[in-house]
Amino acid sequence: MNTRPRKSAQSRPTGQPRRQAAPPPANPKLIALNKPFDVLTQFSDDQDRATLKDFVDIPGVYPAGRLDRDSEGLLLLTNDGRLQARITDPKHKLAKTYWAQVEGEPTEEQLQQLRAGPVLNDGPTRPADVEQIAEPTLWPRNPPVRFRKNKPTSWLAITIREGRNRQVRRMTAAVGLPTLRLVRVRIGDWVLQNLQPGEWREL
Image (spheres, rainbow, N blue to C red):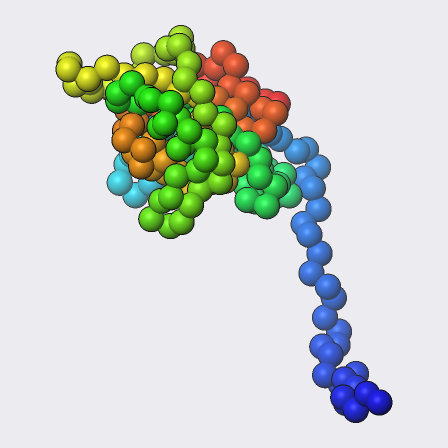
């Protein structure tokens, strides 16, 4: 026999409608921007640093995710909150592909460590897709990357499905391959294509 007391109707909040998701905008927008190096992923800054406002003049759009100030490439912006959540929520495991210029020549062991998911100070990372690639044709970075004359550099294509702070840089550093330049080229099905730094297109 169940002797647990039944919840009284008095204990439930009354007159409070369930929280509803915001309706989609009447004119939904999704923007792909090639974020230049040394630009903050925000629209304002109290230290007078370069921000998205210097490149995107569409009102009401916000970044769907972040890209570090010292990283370049594809950034998505939208005025649709639900789409923004779908792009950024880790539970969707949206794949993001980066081209990373690293210091040194990777060994097969280092590549396997990256694929397996190296352990960072906040725990192990998920498995990643990692391949060594030929140097891609990219725009010159301003300022240029600093090289060590006695150290070769290599390029890796790295696809991850989570979004920790500075994750790709921390992953490559963990296996002894410091990242010198990092360019994001794909988020899910959206790709950078031929956008130049500071250019954007509506998707």
